[in-house]
Length: 121
Length: 128
Image 1 (cartoon, rainbow over the protein chains, first blue to last red):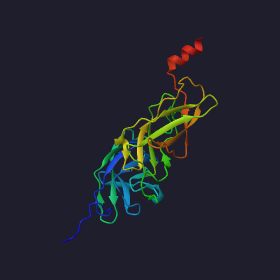
Image 2 (cartoon, chains in turn blue, yellow):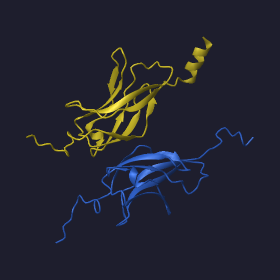
Image 3 (cartoon, rainbow over the protein chains, first blue to last red):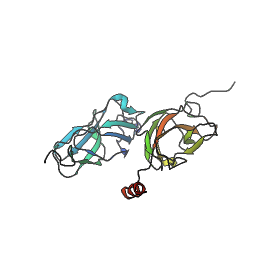
Image 4 (cartoon, chains in turn green, blue):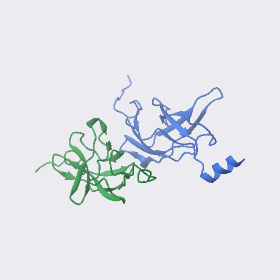
């Protein structure tokens, strides 16, 4: 019989516990702290998705803290000209077995470099 | 001969690795994510302090044991500064401190910024 190690980070369930920020600009680069169940720093991705769109969050292995937290930057949304907020999914994905965690929600807000409409006048 | 267990959380050093914010309102209540070395969820405090000739000030971050994530992260709320009437930002320190024994981490800086008054309040003061 195979021995199944529930604590092995290569096969255990992936889980996002908490994000410090659940909203950010559609141009990305929002710094986010994620608390999660144990992950391997060289075998994990953070995926933002909506429908068929997917993008990877940006972080280095040194941004994975003791296997239970990741500090990363949000990727830009597929459309930088949104006029309303867009809700997307964020999930952990293990590279080795393509296992995904349950998603949590993140909201992209419109990017408005000219909030007072000065350039339009 | 005492047996010294270097892997016990009580024997290891306390260390703050990273915080998602290093400033907040003088009123307190700002939520902070703090990443740290191993802590025991029921034996850790986050101590804010200021040292001066008159004895200084201290206050504690607000969190429950369930806000300690897997021994390596703490989500807490900042305490209010002793005076909420500051006009300029004030920089204080915070550190991890064990309840038992009182061991402390190296301190990190935290800056309290003045409370933003609403527009009416500002106008009222200007008219004086």
